[in-house]
Image (cartoon, rainbow, N blue to C red; front, top):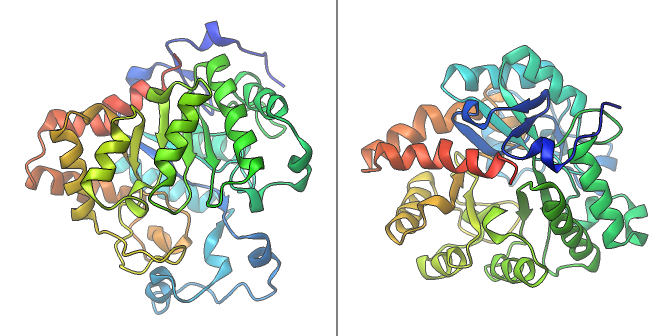
Length: 349
């Protein structure tokens, strides 16, 4: 293992998988992605039928979601990830936050290899995903055990490697919210205080849970201004509820850009399209919350990669930024969402 860092060494810097970096170098940043992942449930992973090879003839059918293909939910190929990240860099992106936490089969050494090959800055998360994905040994662990683990993942190295995390998360929550998930989140908040890292939280799929999580963070002493609530575009659909959440001081992440089909395989909702996402972001900005917005794609299906017929990590830079300009977003607003806010959050406090 490499030399153990401490908070003083990290303060004012960001931490990629290749080491400490000047936050000014982060540039345009995708705040929630997966480069090497496995989001299959244990039952899906155990199914001997992982589905057919992905082709141009079937990728749309898989992407829409009604055809369950477990093999579409896992990517372990570093070469494919490199190709996709290199395309993002060519499109104007610079940094990717990779949030494949415990239960999603993180590959720190793979991320380091991709960063070296592409020149992109990759910031790795740590901690644990939702209850059912976790190692069952976690059932017996306490808050302090989880906190110590995450502190070590930031200061020393994660998942048995010397590759250090630069953010905590994504920390998994669901509805109903389990005691194990609450213990992990409490550990994450202790680790936040000890390290100065931001925390990314995956909320359950009900409109009430992001607000419940924000209250939990405040009740347990977390720095709410450095807590990012993910997947708001599949969770909150009206301005009143959205603005109420923003008023808690948390950071709101719209991270499903490019996923526009109405049907959403994981919950009974009508998925908004990218234009609706931008209208909700516009409302946040108009109510004084520009500094609380970040965006991404949360790619975790092969069929969302360009290699398999999808939009890839370039979509925001190639398509959404021009759409933002066409919809009247100022350059300073785009800069804040893609550069300034991520830089603040990825700089250790």
